Amino acid sequence: MTRFTRRTLLASALLSACSTRKRAKRYAGWLFVASGAERAIAVANLSDFRRMTTIPLAHAPDLLLAGQKHVYSLSGEGAELLEIDPATLKITARMPLPGKPLTARFADEHSAGILLITIESPAQIIALNLTNRTIVGRTPLPGPAVDLDVNGQNAAVAIPSQRAIVRLSATDLKVAGTTSVGVPCQVLRFRNDGRTILAGSADARQVVTVDVASGALLARLPLPLAPSHFCFNSDGGQMFVTGAGQDSVTIVSPYQNEVGETMLAGRTPDAMAISIPRNLLLVTNRETGDLTILDIETRHLSASVHVGGVPGEVMVTPDGEYALVLDRASGSVSVVRLDTVLEPNKGDAPAAVVQLRTKPLFTTFATAGDARSALIVPSPVV
Image (cartoon, rainbow, N blue to C red; front, side, top):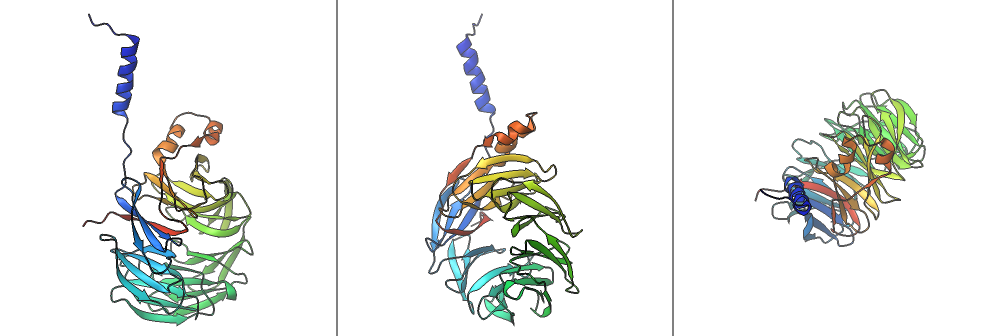
C-alpha cells in the first residue's frame, strides 16, 4: 500500500499547477521607435521583448509610417523622407522634401503608393510617389497645416493660424473649398463614412464639424477639456477625446453631432488606443505614469497598470495579446499582457476591489530616449 505524506501531496499539486500553466504567447514582429536623442531608429524584437539593433540616421526622425513593403521615417530637421526595408533594416532610399514636414498620411491606404505631406514653409501640401520617389503634385496652403487626414478620395487639413479647414482631393490635391471655423483647430479626423470632418480646438474647448460635400459648418460641440487626441471605436460610432482640463475621456457621437457622457480615466488622460477584439479603450496617464483600461460597452474601469515614467504612445499588438506603452523621455517600453491584467474581472470580484487593485506589468525593455514615434511591423519573411 502506497503511503502519501502531506509533503508529497503539496509537491504533486505544485507540479500539476506548473505543468498546466499556459506560457504567454508572443507576437512575431518588430517595434520601430524614432529617437531624437540618438538620431536613430531603435528596433526591438517583440517575440522576446528586447532591443535588437539600431538604424543610425543623419537627422533626428519625427514620424514613422508603415507602408505595405517599407517603413518610412519623416524628419523635420533633415527635411527628408527615408525608406527602410524591414527585412534588412537598411535605408533603401532618401527623398529630399521642399521644406520642413509637419505631418503625413497615405493617399490610399490599400496601395500606400502616394504619401501626402504638409510642409511648414512655404506652406503647402505635396504628393510623393513612393514607387518612383518623385513629387507628383503640390498645392499651396494659406498657412501651415498642423494636422491632415484622408478618407477615400478626400483629404482635409487643419490650419490654426487661419482658423480654417481646407478640403482637397486626395488624388490630385485640387482644393475643394475652405471653411472658416472661427477657432484654431489642432487635430482633425474624418468620420468613418467620409461625409463629415471633426476638428478639435484646444483654445475654444470645442469640436467643430464640417460637411465634406459643401464645406458648411454643421455644429460646435462644447467640451469640458481642451481636445488634443481623438480615437474612434471599431465601427466609428463613438469618438473618444482627451486633453488638458479634466481627468476623463469625453465621448462624442459623430453621427448625431452630439457630446455624450464622460468616463473617468485616471489623472491627465493622454494618448489612446483601441483593443478591438476586447472592445477596450486604453488610455495613458502622463502625470501618474499609469495605463488605464476602460470597457467601452459598460463604461467601467477594467484595469489600471502602473508603467512609470512619462507614458506617451500606447499600441496594441495585432494579435490583441499585449499593450505596449512607450515612455516619451527614456524610450523604455512597458509591456502589459491583457489576459493577465483582465483576469480578475472574469470572476465575481466586487467592482470596488477591481478598481483599487493595480495590475502588474508583464515586462519592460529599453529602446532609445526622446521617443517621438513608434509602430509595430510584422516580422518580414527574409
